[in-house]
Image (cartoon, rainbow over all chains, first blue to last red):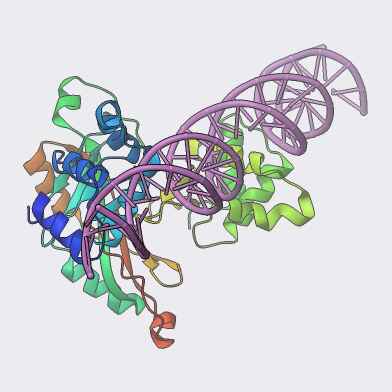
Length: 152
Length: 152
DNA sequence: ATAATAAGTGAAAGTCTTTTTCATTTAGCG
DNA sequence: CGCTAAATGAAAAAGACTTTCACTTATTAT
């Protein structure tokens, strides 16, 4: 983990954004979670106490993304969620198709694949996503059925 | 390409679905395109002549997906599109971040990565998606700027 | 071939998520 | 402390998708 709460505030300030209580709260909520969160999930964690509006959450997520501090992740199920950026830790996602648990996969070793694809297609490859889908240990233990969705 | 128009109709019939002019039209439109299409894109190709409603497109896409004949693809930009299924051709997608062109990447050789991840996490890996992003030859030639989005 | 019927369709209304507008508030500066 | 541009909240709007319901049609059994 590279960016701390203080780092994030400093970076926001550096980019000319103001530090508001709402932004502090949202960042702290995202810091407290290892996994991805949808705007609504973030909202439900602020809601009771601070009275931050959902609109502000959307706008703050936009702002944080523009500042390069979080990244957007569109799951295969079509939902948009966000994750605080941990630069220099290139990683990928493994999603349990039964319960939806998301865990990070470490490095991928796809450099040579990128090179081959670049040669084949003429594209200049900038980045990639690799998402795996499977059944987590817990769901295997409980013998829960996977939804059986197959990617193609 | 494994499924032809006739194959698709036969499979639909086999699963107890009716063959309607609307379904024929939608399948033909998808057959005529190598790339992914959003429901709206499909709609705009039918619109003028046949008067198929957008609702029917959504419903037909659901039906085709249930029958395992197409697959859903949620792009990193958050849009849902669909592609006719070509079974036995496991492939991945390469998207141009400038113009949005999608091309298919052939086989990926990720079996050993899957095995490593499975060992690390305890997941039973069922499938994966690998999407690459870059700049296509055309956009490189025209020196168009990439949006610079970085995945994480 | 035709009638019966279960499935499919279109229009309109309804959801759900995200964005825009606009009046009010506030962070950060002098 | 006061100014000003930026940020916020509420409400309305936009966009994508789903549901409802009355009507139509593809299939089947006669």
